[in-house]
Image 1 (tube, rainbow, N blue to C red):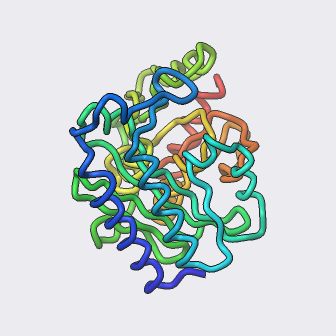
Image 2 (image 1 turned 45 degrees about the vertical axis):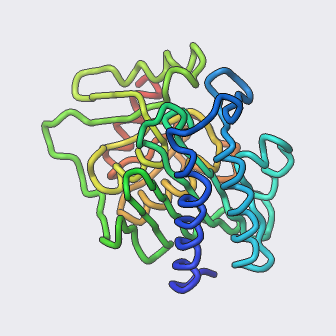
Image 3 (image 1 turned 135 degrees about the vertical axis):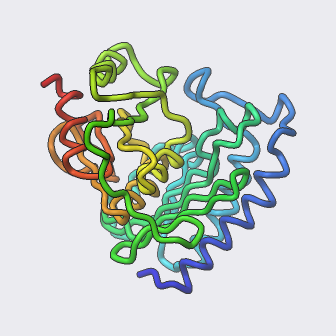
Length: 271
C-alpha cells in the first residue's frame, strides 16, 4: 500500500505544512486564535485547523481512494470517526499533538499522521518541528528517528520502570484512582506531555511504558506503530492489543517489552 517513495512524499508534506502553518504561529498566537472545545483544557488554535485542512487535501490526493480522519474534522462532525471501521485506507491526523504546550510556547508538540487499512496500521509519521525531530515507521520495515533505526529494548533489571500516564487535567476521578495504582515501589510514574512524543521515547528506549485511558485514534496511531516496529508491544486491560477503531477496554499500555506491559497491566487491573 505504501512504498518508500510515497512515504517520503508524506513526510515532505508534513514538514511543509508544519513550516508554513504551525511554526509561524508558535509563540505568536493572538488571543482570538485560541479556543476551547469540549472542556477548558481542550484547546484548538488556528494552527491546528489550518494544518489539518492542508494535510487533508494533500494526503487524500497522494493516495487515491483514501479518506482522512482528523481531530478537528471529528470535533466538527463525530460521524467522520466511523471511517476507521470502513474498507478504505484511512489517514489519521493530529495536526498539533500537545496543543497545550504549543499555546504555552513550549517545544513539546508535534504533528502526527498514521495510515491504517481495515484496522491495521501501515505507516506513521511524528514530526516535532520545534525539536527538529522526525520519526516514522512502516509495518514490517522498522521504526526510525531522524533517519536512524531505533529499538525499544528492555528495561534494566533492578531499575524502577519509568511510565508516562494520562495528565490529570484530562482524567475523571475514577481514572485518577486507577492510574494511582502505578504509584508503587519499582515504578516511577509521571504525567505525560505530548502523547506522540511519549511514544517516540518508548520506541527509543528512553521511557519504559505509557498508560493511557482514552481512545482517540489521532493521539495513538502514529505512536503505536512506532513502538511495535521498534520491538515493543501494546495491550489493554482486557489482555488484547489496542484496536485503533475503538471499543477498547481501558486503560491500556504501550511498553518496551511484554514483561513490562504485563507488569503495568497487572497494576492497572488492581492485581
